[in-house]
Image 1 (cartoon, each protein chain N blue to C red):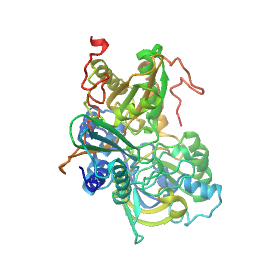
Image 2: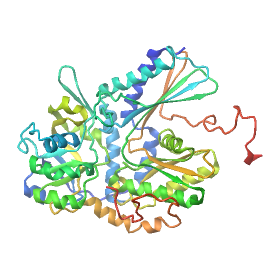
Image 3: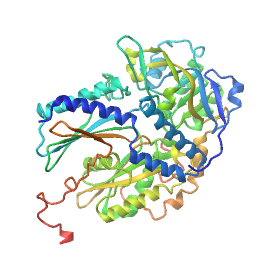
Image 4: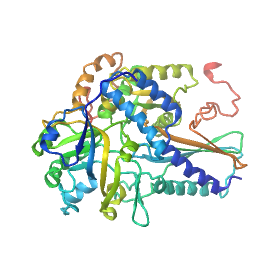
Length: 225
Length: 320
Protein backbone atom coordinates (compact mmCIF):
# COMPACT_ATOMS: atom_id res chain seq x y z
CA UNK A 1 0.00 0.00 0.00
CA UNK A 2 1.44 3.32 -1.03
CA UNK A 3 1.34 5.78 1.81
CA UNK A 4 -1.47 8.27 1.67
CA UNK A 5 -2.31 11.24 3.81
CA UNK A 6 -4.75 10.61 6.62
CA UNK A 7 -8.15 11.78 5.54
CA UNK A 8 -10.16 13.96 7.84
CA UNK A 9 -12.50 11.58 9.67
CA UNK A 10 -15.69 12.91 11.18
CA UNK A 11 -18.41 11.35 13.38
CA UNK A 12 -21.71 12.85 12.28
CA UNK A 13 -25.23 12.58 13.68
CA UNK A 14 -27.94 11.46 11.27
CA UNK A 15 -29.78 14.72 12.01
CA UNK A 16 -26.85 17.09 11.52
CA UNK A 17 -27.00 20.85 12.04
CA UNK A 18 -26.20 23.28 9.24
CA UNK A 19 -22.93 24.05 11.06
CA UNK A 20 -22.03 20.36 11.16
CA UNK A 21 -22.49 20.17 7.40
CA UNK A 22 -20.73 23.49 6.74
CA UNK A 23 -17.63 22.06 8.40
CA UNK A 24 -17.41 19.22 5.86
CA UNK A 25 -15.41 19.31 2.63
CA UNK A 26 -15.69 16.99 -0.33
CA UNK A 27 -13.34 14.05 0.21
CA UNK A 28 -13.76 13.95 4.01
CA UNK A 29 -14.50 10.56 5.53
CA UNK A 30 -17.65 10.31 7.63
CA UNK A 31 -19.06 7.80 10.13
CA UNK A 32 -22.69 8.13 11.20
CA UNK A 33 -24.51 7.74 14.51
CA UNK A 34 -28.28 7.67 14.91
CA UNK A 35 -30.97 6.35 12.58
CA UNK A 36 -31.02 5.92 8.82
CA UNK A 37 -33.83 4.66 6.63
CA UNK A 38 -33.82 3.08 3.18
CA UNK A 39 -35.91 4.64 0.44
CA UNK A 40 -35.43 4.12 -3.28
CA UNK A 41 -37.68 3.87 -6.36
CA UNK A 42 -40.38 1.81 -4.65
CA UNK A 43 -40.81 4.24 -1.76
CA UNK A 44 -40.40 7.33 -3.96
CA UNK A 45 -43.12 6.17 -6.33
CA UNK A 46 -45.43 5.31 -3.50
CA UNK A 47 -45.02 8.61 -1.68
CA UNK A 48 -44.48 11.07 -4.51
CA UNK A 49 -46.51 9.61 -7.38
CA UNK A 50 -49.21 7.74 -5.47
CA UNK A 51 -49.51 10.19 -2.57
CA UNK A 52 -49.27 7.76 0.34
CA UNK A 53 -48.42 9.48 3.64
CA UNK A 54 -44.98 8.81 5.11
CA UNK A 55 -45.11 5.84 7.46
CA UNK A 56 -42.84 7.53 10.02
CA UNK A 57 -42.18 11.03 11.28
CA UNK A 58 -39.49 12.57 9.07
CA UNK A 59 -37.10 14.23 9.63
CA UNK A 60 -37.75 13.94 13.38
CA UNK A 61 -36.92 10.24 13.40
CA UNK A 62 -34.13 10.43 10.83
CA UNK A 63 -32.58 12.94 8.45
CA UNK A 64 -30.59 10.32 6.53
CA UNK A 65 -31.99 8.55 3.46
CA UNK A 66 -29.91 5.56 2.38
CA UNK A 67 -30.26 4.35 -1.24
CA UNK A 68 -29.96 0.76 -0.22
CA UNK A 69 -31.58 -2.61 0.09
CA UNK A 70 -30.03 -4.61 2.89
CA UNK A 71 -29.09 -8.27 2.61
CA UNK A 72 -31.57 -9.12 5.30
CA UNK A 73 -34.41 -11.42 6.13
CA UNK A 74 -37.38 -11.31 8.46
CA UNK A 75 -37.55 -14.43 10.62
CA UNK A 76 -40.88 -16.22 11.13
CA UNK A 77 -41.05 -14.76 14.66
CA UNK A 78 -40.85 -11.24 13.19
CA UNK A 79 -37.25 -10.57 14.26
CA UNK A 80 -34.64 -9.44 11.74
CA UNK A 81 -31.43 -10.95 10.48
CA UNK A 82 -29.39 -8.21 8.82
CA UNK A 83 -26.07 -9.12 7.26
CA UNK A 84 -24.40 -6.79 4.82
CA UNK A 85 -25.67 -3.41 3.65
CA UNK A 86 -24.54 -1.71 0.47
CA UNK A 87 -25.79 1.24 -1.50
CA UNK A 88 -27.38 1.25 -4.91
CA UNK A 89 -26.61 3.82 -7.64
CA UNK A 90 -28.38 7.09 -6.90
CA UNK A 91 -28.45 8.83 -10.27
CA UNK A 92 -31.57 6.85 -11.20
CA UNK A 93 -33.56 8.67 -8.53
CA UNK A 94 -32.89 12.13 -9.88
CA UNK A 95 -36.47 12.72 -11.01
CA UNK A 96 -37.83 12.22 -7.49
CA UNK A 97 -35.10 13.69 -5.31
CA UNK A 98 -36.31 17.31 -5.17
CA UNK A 99 -39.78 16.39 -3.99
CA UNK A 100 -38.39 13.79 -1.67
CA UNK A 101 -36.14 16.34 0.05
CA UNK A 102 -39.25 18.56 0.39
CA UNK A 103 -41.35 15.84 1.96
CA UNK A 104 -38.72 14.12 4.08
CA UNK A 105 -36.56 17.03 5.20
CA UNK A 106 -33.54 14.77 4.69
CA UNK A 107 -30.13 16.42 5.15
CA UNK A 108 -28.06 13.42 4.18
CA UNK A 109 -28.52 11.32 1.07
CA UNK A 110 -26.37 8.19 1.22
CA UNK A 111 -25.78 6.03 -1.81
CA UNK A 112 -23.54 4.84 -4.61
CA UNK A 113 -21.96 7.11 -7.21
CA UNK A 114 -23.57 10.40 -6.26
CA UNK A 115 -25.81 12.50 -8.43
CA UNK A 116 -24.92 15.29 -10.85
CA UNK A 117 -23.78 18.67 -9.58
CA UNK A 118 -26.79 20.04 -11.49
CA UNK A 119 -28.99 17.98 -9.16
CA UNK A 120 -27.03 19.17 -6.14
CA UNK A 121 -27.38 22.82 -7.10
CA UNK A 122 -31.04 22.53 -8.03
CA UNK A 123 -32.27 20.28 -5.23
CA UNK A 124 -29.71 19.72 -2.47
CA UNK A 125 -28.40 23.26 -1.97
CA UNK A 126 -31.85 24.86 -1.38
CA UNK A 127 -32.61 22.12 1.17
CA UNK A 128 -29.25 22.35 2.92
CA UNK A 129 -28.57 18.70 2.14
CA UNK A 130 -25.39 16.90 1.15
CA UNK A 131 -24.53 13.57 -0.48
CA UNK A 132 -22.35 10.93 1.16
CA UNK A 133 -21.09 8.08 -0.99
CA UNK A 134 -20.37 4.59 0.28
CA UNK A 135 -16.83 3.36 -0.28
CA UNK A 136 -15.76 0.64 -2.62
CA UNK A 137 -18.43 -0.27 -3.55
CA UNK A 138 -19.44 -2.08 -1.20
CA UNK A 139 -17.91 -2.27 2.11
CA UNK A 140 -21.07 -4.19 2.94
CA UNK A 141 -19.61 -6.13 5.86
CA UNK A 142 -18.06 -3.05 7.48
CA UNK A 143 -21.35 -1.18 7.12
CA UNK A 144 -23.19 -4.21 8.50
CA UNK A 145 -21.04 -3.98 11.64
CA UNK A 146 -22.25 -0.42 12.13
CA UNK A 147 -25.89 -1.50 12.30
CA UNK A 148 -27.03 -1.61 15.92
CA UNK A 149 -30.46 -2.95 15.04
CA UNK A 150 -33.49 -2.80 12.79
CA UNK A 151 -36.08 -0.48 14.33
CA UNK A 152 -38.91 -1.18 11.92
CA UNK A 153 -39.72 -2.17 8.35
CA UNK A 154 -42.51 -0.33 6.53
CA UNK A 155 -44.36 -1.48 3.42
CA UNK A 156 -42.77 -4.90 3.42
CA UNK A 157 -45.86 -6.51 1.87
CA UNK A 158 -46.55 -3.71 -0.56
CA UNK A 159 -42.98 -3.34 -1.87
CA UNK A 160 -41.12 -6.54 -1.02
CA UNK A 161 -38.03 -6.91 1.17
CA UNK A 162 -35.64 -5.13 -1.19
CA UNK A 163 -37.76 -2.02 -1.75
CA UNK A 164 -39.34 -1.81 1.71
CA UNK A 165 -38.46 1.07 4.01
CA UNK A 166 -35.99 -0.28 6.57
CA UNK A 167 -35.42 1.94 9.59
CA UNK A 168 -32.03 1.09 11.01
CA UNK A 169 -30.19 2.18 14.14
CA UNK A 170 -26.51 2.87 13.39
CA UNK A 171 -23.38 3.47 15.39
CA UNK A 172 -20.01 4.39 13.89
CA UNK A 173 -21.62 3.44 10.57
CA UNK A 174 -19.22 3.86 7.70
CA UNK A 175 -17.00 4.68 6.02
CA UNK A 176 -18.67 7.22 3.77
CA UNK A 177 -16.95 9.91 1.70
CA UNK A 178 -18.39 13.41 1.36
CA UNK A 179 -19.32 13.63 -2.33
CA UNK A 180 -21.22 16.94 -2.32
CA UNK A 181 -20.93 19.95 -0.04
CA UNK A 182 -23.46 22.62 0.87
CA UNK A 183 -22.48 24.61 -2.25
CA UNK A 184 -23.27 21.68 -4.52
CA UNK A 185 -19.70 20.81 -5.52
CA UNK A 186 -19.13 17.19 -6.54
CA UNK A 187 -16.03 15.16 -5.70
CA UNK A 188 -16.73 12.73 -8.56
CA UNK A 189 -16.98 15.50 -11.09
CA UNK A 190 -13.74 17.03 -9.82
CA UNK A 191 -12.02 13.66 -10.33
CA UNK A 192 -13.67 13.14 -13.73
CA UNK A 193 -12.27 16.45 -14.95
CA UNK A 194 -8.74 15.51 -13.84
CA UNK A 195 -8.95 12.13 -15.58
CA UNK A 196 -10.55 13.51 -18.77
CA UNK A 197 -7.48 15.71 -19.29
CA UNK A 198 -5.35 12.62 -19.99
CA UNK A 199 -7.82 10.54 -21.99
CA UNK A 200 -6.90 11.72 -25.49
CA UNK A 201 -3.45 10.20 -25.03
CA UNK A 202 -4.89 6.90 -23.75
CA UNK A 203 -7.11 6.67 -26.84
CA UNK A 204 -4.25 7.23 -29.26
CA UNK A 205 -4.08 4.39 -31.78
CA UNK A 206 -7.75 3.50 -31.45
CA UNK A 207 -10.44 4.07 -34.06
CA UNK A 208 -14.19 4.82 -33.91
CA UNK A 209 -16.39 1.87 -34.85
CA UNK A 210 -17.50 1.70 -38.48
CA UNK A 211 -21.10 1.03 -37.38
CA UNK A 212 -22.32 3.96 -35.30
CA UNK A 213 -25.10 4.07 -32.74
CA UNK A 214 -27.85 6.65 -32.47
CA UNK A 215 -27.08 9.11 -29.71
CA UNK A 216 -23.39 8.22 -29.57
CA UNK A 217 -20.80 10.73 -28.38
CA UNK A 218 -17.03 10.89 -28.76
CA UNK A 219 -16.77 13.47 -25.98
CA UNK A 220 -15.21 11.50 -23.15
CA UNK A 221 -15.57 14.27 -20.62
CA UNK A 222 -19.26 13.39 -20.89
CA UNK A 223 -20.90 10.96 -18.46
CA UNK A 224 -23.39 8.15 -18.99
CA UNK A 225 -25.55 9.23 -16.06
CA UNK B 1 -25.01 -42.11 -8.89
CA UNK B 2 -24.66 -38.82 -7.07
CA UNK B 3 -27.31 -38.37 -4.36
CA UNK B 4 -29.51 -35.33 -4.91
CA UNK B 5 -29.38 -34.42 -1.21
CA UNK B 6 -25.59 -34.09 -1.44
CA UNK B 7 -25.95 -31.77 -4.44
CA UNK B 8 -28.36 -29.53 -2.59
CA UNK B 9 -26.35 -29.31 0.63
CA UNK B 10 -23.16 -28.63 -1.33
CA UNK B 11 -24.95 -25.93 -3.29
CA UNK B 12 -26.10 -24.20 -0.09
CA UNK B 13 -22.51 -24.20 1.20
CA UNK B 14 -21.31 -22.76 -2.12
CA UNK B 15 -23.81 -19.90 -1.92
CA UNK B 16 -22.49 -19.07 1.54
CA UNK B 17 -18.83 -19.22 0.46
CA UNK B 18 -19.37 -17.14 -2.67
CA UNK B 19 -21.10 -14.35 -0.77
CA UNK B 20 -18.64 -14.23 2.14
CA UNK B 21 -15.15 -15.40 1.12
CA UNK B 22 -13.05 -13.38 -1.31
CA UNK B 23 -11.27 -15.80 -3.70
CA UNK B 24 -7.51 -15.96 -3.03
CA UNK B 25 -6.48 -15.23 -6.61
CA UNK B 26 -8.50 -12.01 -6.70
CA UNK B 27 -7.33 -11.00 -3.22
CA UNK B 28 -3.71 -11.47 -4.30
CA UNK B 29 -4.32 -9.38 -7.41
CA UNK B 30 -6.00 -6.62 -5.44
CA UNK B 31 -3.16 -6.53 -2.91
CA UNK B 32 -0.70 -6.07 -5.77
CA UNK B 33 -2.82 -3.25 -7.17
CA UNK B 34 -3.07 -1.63 -3.74
CA UNK B 35 0.71 -1.81 -3.33
CA UNK B 36 1.33 0.34 -6.40
CA UNK B 37 -1.73 2.61 -6.22
CA UNK B 38 -0.62 6.17 -5.54
CA UNK B 39 -3.94 8.01 -5.92
CA UNK B 40 -4.87 9.17 -2.40
CA UNK B 41 -8.58 8.49 -2.62
CA UNK B 42 -8.24 5.28 -4.66
CA UNK B 43 -5.71 4.02 -2.17
CA UNK B 44 -8.07 4.75 0.74
CA UNK B 45 -10.84 2.84 -1.04
CA UNK B 46 -8.68 -0.24 -1.67
CA UNK B 47 -7.60 -0.29 1.95
CA UNK B 48 -11.24 -0.13 3.07
CA UNK B 49 -12.09 -3.02 0.74
CA UNK B 50 -9.26 -5.15 2.16
CA UNK B 51 -10.60 -4.47 5.67
CA UNK B 52 -14.09 -5.31 4.45
CA UNK B 53 -13.06 -8.80 3.28
CA UNK B 54 -11.63 -9.49 6.74
CA UNK B 55 -14.80 -8.26 8.42
CA UNK B 56 -16.93 -10.45 6.15
CA UNK B 57 -14.95 -13.59 6.99
CA UNK B 58 -14.77 -12.85 10.72
CA UNK B 59 -18.49 -12.13 11.02
CA UNK B 60 -19.60 -14.63 8.36
CA UNK B 61 -21.60 -11.90 6.67
CA UNK B 62 -21.81 -11.09 2.97
CA UNK B 63 -18.94 -8.96 1.62
CA UNK B 64 -21.33 -6.69 -0.21
CA UNK B 65 -24.94 -5.89 0.60
CA UNK B 66 -25.83 -6.15 -3.06
CA UNK B 67 -25.31 -9.85 -3.34
CA UNK B 68 -25.94 -9.74 -7.06
CA UNK B 69 -27.90 -12.24 -9.06
CA UNK B 70 -26.84 -15.73 -8.00
CA UNK B 71 -26.39 -18.09 -10.96
CA UNK B 72 -25.14 -21.61 -11.51
CA UNK B 73 -22.67 -23.26 -13.85
CA UNK B 74 -22.88 -27.03 -13.88
CA UNK B 75 -20.35 -29.22 -15.56
CA UNK B 76 -21.00 -32.93 -15.82
CA UNK B 77 -18.33 -35.45 -16.61
CA UNK B 78 -19.44 -37.91 -19.26
CA UNK B 79 -20.06 -40.85 -16.95
CA UNK B 80 -21.74 -38.91 -14.11
CA UNK B 81 -25.32 -39.67 -13.22
CA UNK B 82 -27.49 -37.75 -10.81
CA UNK B 83 -30.23 -39.19 -8.65
CA UNK B 84 -33.50 -38.02 -10.21
CA UNK B 85 -31.81 -36.79 -13.36
CA UNK B 86 -31.33 -33.23 -14.63
CA UNK B 87 -34.80 -32.08 -13.55
CA UNK B 88 -34.04 -33.03 -9.94
CA UNK B 89 -30.65 -31.31 -10.27
CA UNK B 90 -32.25 -28.05 -11.38
CA UNK B 91 -34.78 -28.24 -8.58
CA UNK B 92 -31.98 -28.80 -6.02
CA UNK B 93 -30.13 -25.71 -7.25
CA UNK B 94 -33.30 -23.61 -7.11
CA UNK B 95 -33.99 -24.85 -3.58
CA UNK B 96 -30.41 -24.11 -2.51
CA UNK B 97 -30.68 -20.59 -3.95
CA UNK B 98 -33.88 -19.89 -2.05
CA UNK B 99 -32.59 -21.44 1.17
CA UNK B 100 -29.30 -19.51 1.10
CA UNK B 101 -31.06 -16.24 0.29
CA UNK B 102 -32.83 -16.50 3.62
CA UNK B 103 -29.97 -18.19 5.43
CA UNK B 104 -26.80 -16.16 4.70
CA UNK B 105 -28.79 -13.83 4.24
CA UNK B 106 -28.53 -12.54 0.67
CA UNK B 107 -30.46 -9.63 -0.74
CA UNK B 108 -33.55 -10.93 -2.57
CA UNK B 109 -32.68 -9.01 -5.72
CA UNK B 110 -34.69 -10.90 -8.29
CA UNK B 111 -38.00 -9.40 -9.35
CA UNK B 112 -40.32 -9.67 -12.34
CA UNK B 113 -39.07 -7.12 -14.91
CA UNK B 114 -42.48 -5.54 -15.49
CA UNK B 115 -44.58 -6.19 -12.41
CA UNK B 116 -41.67 -5.84 -9.96
CA UNK B 117 -43.12 -8.67 -7.90
CA UNK B 118 -40.90 -11.24 -6.25
CA UNK B 119 -40.73 -14.25 -3.95
CA UNK B 120 -38.01 -12.83 -1.66
CA UNK B 121 -35.78 -15.78 -2.50
CA UNK B 122 -33.92 -14.95 -5.76
CA UNK B 123 -35.93 -17.59 -7.60
CA UNK B 124 -38.40 -16.84 -10.36
CA UNK B 125 -38.94 -17.05 -14.10
CA UNK B 126 -35.55 -17.93 -15.65
CA UNK B 127 -33.86 -17.26 -12.34
CA UNK B 128 -31.39 -18.38 -11.20
CA UNK B 129 -29.70 -19.08 -14.53
CA UNK B 130 -28.41 -22.66 -14.68
CA UNK B 131 -25.96 -23.35 -17.49
CA UNK B 132 -24.62 -26.78 -18.36
CA UNK B 133 -21.48 -28.09 -19.99
CA UNK B 134 -19.89 -31.50 -20.30
CA UNK B 135 -16.41 -32.99 -20.05
CA UNK B 136 -15.05 -36.27 -21.38
CA UNK B 137 -13.92 -38.87 -18.83
CA UNK B 138 -14.95 -38.98 -15.21
CA UNK B 139 -18.03 -39.46 -13.08
CA UNK B 140 -18.10 -36.18 -11.16
CA UNK B 141 -20.07 -33.00 -11.44
CA UNK B 142 -18.68 -29.51 -10.85
CA UNK B 143 -20.98 -26.91 -9.35
CA UNK B 144 -19.99 -23.26 -9.59
CA UNK B 145 -22.03 -20.37 -8.32
CA UNK B 146 -21.32 -16.78 -9.31
CA UNK B 147 -22.94 -13.81 -7.61
CA UNK B 148 -22.43 -11.06 -10.13
CA UNK B 149 -23.94 -7.62 -9.85
CA UNK B 150 -26.19 -6.89 -12.73
CA UNK B 151 -26.44 -3.21 -13.60
CA UNK B 152 -23.23 -1.60 -14.86
CA UNK B 153 -19.91 -2.38 -16.46
CA UNK B 154 -21.08 -4.60 -19.29
CA UNK B 155 -21.64 -3.68 -22.91
CA UNK B 156 -21.93 -5.27 -26.34
CA UNK B 157 -21.07 -3.94 -29.77
CA UNK B 158 -21.20 -5.30 -33.28
CA UNK B 159 -17.78 -4.62 -34.74
CA UNK B 160 -16.52 -5.65 -38.17
CA UNK B 161 -13.22 -7.02 -39.44
CA UNK B 162 -12.34 -3.55 -40.75
CA UNK B 163 -12.54 -2.19 -37.17
CA UNK B 164 -9.48 -4.29 -36.36
CA UNK B 165 -7.56 -4.25 -33.10
CA UNK B 166 -7.87 -0.45 -33.04
CA UNK B 167 -11.64 -0.78 -32.89
CA UNK B 168 -11.49 -3.49 -30.24
CA UNK B 169 -9.26 -1.28 -28.10
CA UNK B 170 -11.60 1.67 -28.57
CA UNK B 171 -14.66 -0.24 -27.39
CA UNK B 172 -12.72 -1.74 -24.48
CA UNK B 173 -11.61 1.71 -23.32
CA UNK B 174 -15.08 3.16 -23.87
CA UNK B 175 -16.61 0.47 -21.65
CA UNK B 176 -14.08 1.01 -18.86
CA UNK B 177 -14.25 4.81 -18.96
CA UNK B 178 -18.03 5.12 -19.33
CA UNK B 179 -18.85 2.79 -16.44
CA UNK B 180 -15.69 3.54 -14.45
CA UNK B 181 -16.71 7.12 -13.73
CA UNK B 182 -18.13 7.36 -10.21
CA UNK B 183 -17.13 3.71 -9.87
CA UNK B 184 -20.38 2.43 -11.34
CA UNK B 185 -18.70 -0.82 -12.39
CA UNK B 186 -17.23 -1.40 -8.90
CA UNK B 187 -13.66 -1.50 -10.17
CA UNK B 188 -10.93 -2.65 -9.93
CA UNK B 189 -12.31 -5.84 -11.36
CA UNK B 190 -11.54 -8.82 -13.51
CA UNK B 191 -12.54 -7.80 -17.03
CA UNK B 192 -13.85 -10.42 -19.43
CA UNK B 193 -14.01 -9.87 -23.17
CA UNK B 194 -15.99 -11.99 -25.58
CA UNK B 195 -15.01 -11.88 -29.24
CA UNK B 196 -16.97 -13.47 -32.06
CA UNK B 197 -19.63 -16.12 -31.78
CA UNK B 198 -23.04 -14.63 -32.36
CA UNK B 199 -24.50 -11.84 -30.26
CA UNK B 200 -25.71 -14.14 -27.49
CA UNK B 201 -22.65 -16.41 -27.41
CA UNK B 202 -20.42 -13.33 -27.46
CA UNK B 203 -22.12 -12.10 -24.29
CA UNK B 204 -21.94 -15.54 -22.70
CA UNK B 205 -18.23 -15.94 -23.53
CA UNK B 206 -17.32 -12.51 -22.15
CA UNK B 207 -19.25 -13.07 -18.97
CA UNK B 208 -17.66 -16.46 -18.44
CA UNK B 209 -14.22 -14.96 -19.17
CA UNK B 210 -14.82 -12.45 -16.35
CA UNK B 211 -16.45 -14.81 -13.86
CA UNK B 212 -14.96 -18.26 -14.49
CA UNK B 213 -11.25 -17.54 -14.98
CA UNK B 214 -8.81 -16.64 -12.22
CA UNK B 215 -6.28 -13.85 -11.89
CA UNK B 216 -3.05 -14.79 -13.68
CA UNK B 217 -4.68 -17.32 -15.99
CA UNK B 218 -3.84 -16.88 -19.69
CA UNK B 219 -5.58 -17.99 -22.85
CA UNK B 220 -3.66 -20.90 -24.45
CA UNK B 221 -3.49 -19.02 -27.78
CA UNK B 222 -0.24 -17.01 -27.41
CA UNK B 223 -1.63 -14.16 -29.51
CA UNK B 224 -4.69 -13.84 -27.31
CA UNK B 225 -2.58 -14.20 -24.16
CA UNK B 226 -0.49 -11.26 -25.35
CA UNK B 227 -3.63 -9.20 -25.92
CA UNK B 228 -4.84 -10.04 -22.40
CA UNK B 229 -1.60 -8.66 -20.94
CA UNK B 230 -1.73 -5.61 -23.18
CA UNK B 231 -5.35 -4.85 -22.32
CA UNK B 232 -4.71 -5.23 -18.61
CA UNK B 233 -1.95 -2.62 -18.83
CA UNK B 234 -4.03 -0.39 -21.10
CA UNK B 235 -6.92 -0.40 -18.63
CA UNK B 236 -4.60 0.50 -15.80
CA UNK B 237 -3.14 3.40 -17.78
CA UNK B 238 -6.41 5.32 -18.08
CA UNK B 239 -5.59 7.37 -14.99
CA UNK B 240 -8.65 6.11 -13.16
CA UNK B 241 -8.84 3.93 -10.07
CA UNK B 242 -11.41 2.67 -7.58
CA UNK B 243 -14.71 4.60 -7.53
CA UNK B 244 -13.60 6.63 -10.54
CA UNK B 245 -11.05 8.56 -8.47
CA UNK B 246 -7.68 9.48 -9.93
CA UNK B 247 -5.51 6.38 -9.79
CA UNK B 248 -4.28 3.41 -11.74
CA UNK B 249 -6.17 0.37 -10.51
CA UNK B 250 -8.97 -0.46 -12.92
CA UNK B 251 -8.19 -3.98 -14.09
CA UNK B 252 -7.00 -6.78 -11.81
CA UNK B 253 -6.80 -9.04 -14.83
CA UNK B 254 -8.20 -9.25 -18.35
CA UNK B 255 -9.46 -12.48 -19.91
CA UNK B 256 -10.47 -12.94 -23.53
CA UNK B 257 -12.54 -15.80 -24.94
CA UNK B 258 -13.36 -16.28 -28.59
CA UNK B 259 -15.90 -18.13 -30.70
CA UNK B 260 -16.05 -18.61 -34.44
CA UNK B 261 -18.30 -15.93 -35.94
CA UNK B 262 -19.91 -14.85 -39.20
CA UNK B 263 -17.23 -14.08 -41.77
CA UNK B 264 -18.42 -10.48 -42.02
CA UNK B 265 -18.52 -9.67 -38.32
CA UNK B 266 -16.45 -9.33 -35.15
CA UNK B 267 -18.85 -9.24 -32.19
CA UNK B 268 -17.43 -7.88 -28.96
CA UNK B 269 -18.63 -7.83 -25.37
CA UNK B 270 -16.96 -6.39 -22.28
CA UNK B 271 -17.89 -7.51 -18.77
CA UNK B 272 -16.60 -6.18 -15.46
CA UNK B 273 -16.86 -8.52 -12.51
CA UNK B 274 -16.62 -6.51 -9.28
CA UNK B 275 -14.52 -5.69 -6.24
CA UNK B 276 -15.94 -8.75 -4.54
CA UNK B 277 -15.58 -11.22 -7.47
CA UNK B 278 -17.94 -13.71 -5.90
CA UNK B 279 -17.47 -17.26 -7.12
CA UNK B 280 -17.23 -20.64 -5.42
CA UNK B 281 -17.00 -24.18 -6.80
CA UNK B 282 -17.10 -27.75 -5.71
CA UNK B 283 -16.50 -31.08 -7.37
CA UNK B 284 -18.88 -33.82 -6.22
CA UNK B 285 -17.62 -37.31 -6.96
CA UNK B 286 -19.82 -40.34 -7.41
CA UNK B 287 -18.35 -41.87 -4.23
CA UNK B 288 -19.70 -38.92 -2.23
CA UNK B 289 -16.46 -36.93 -1.86
CA UNK B 290 -16.83 -33.15 -2.14
CA UNK B 291 -13.85 -30.90 -2.89
CA UNK B 292 -14.29 -27.13 -2.57
CA UNK B 293 -12.20 -24.66 -4.54
CA UNK B 294 -12.38 -21.16 -6.02
CA UNK B 295 -11.07 -21.87 -9.55
CA UNK B 296 -13.99 -23.02 -11.73
CA UNK B 297 -11.50 -24.42 -14.29
CA UNK B 298 -14.28 -23.98 -16.82
CA UNK B 299 -12.26 -23.33 -19.97
CA UNK B 300 -10.64 -26.70 -20.53
CA UNK B 301 -9.22 -27.79 -23.89
CA UNK B 302 -12.53 -29.58 -24.45
CA UNK B 303 -14.57 -26.40 -23.97
CA UNK B 304 -12.32 -24.57 -26.44
CA UNK B 305 -12.19 -27.41 -28.97
CA UNK B 306 -12.30 -26.47 -32.62
CA UNK B 307 -12.32 -29.82 -34.37
CA UNK B 308 -15.25 -32.01 -35.38
CA UNK B 309 -14.26 -34.99 -33.28
CA UNK B 310 -12.93 -35.29 -29.76
CA UNK B 311 -10.21 -36.21 -29.08
CA UNK B 312 -9.04 -34.08 -31.99
CA UNK B 313 -8.35 -36.25 -35.01
CA UNK B 314 -7.58 -33.54 -37.53
CA UNK B 315 -5.18 -30.62 -37.28
CA UNK B 316 -6.66 -27.16 -37.73
CA UNK B 317 -5.91 -25.57 -41.08
CA UNK B 318 -3.62 -22.96 -39.56
CA UNK B 319 -1.25 -25.49 -38.04
CA UNK B 320 -1.38 -27.86 -41.01
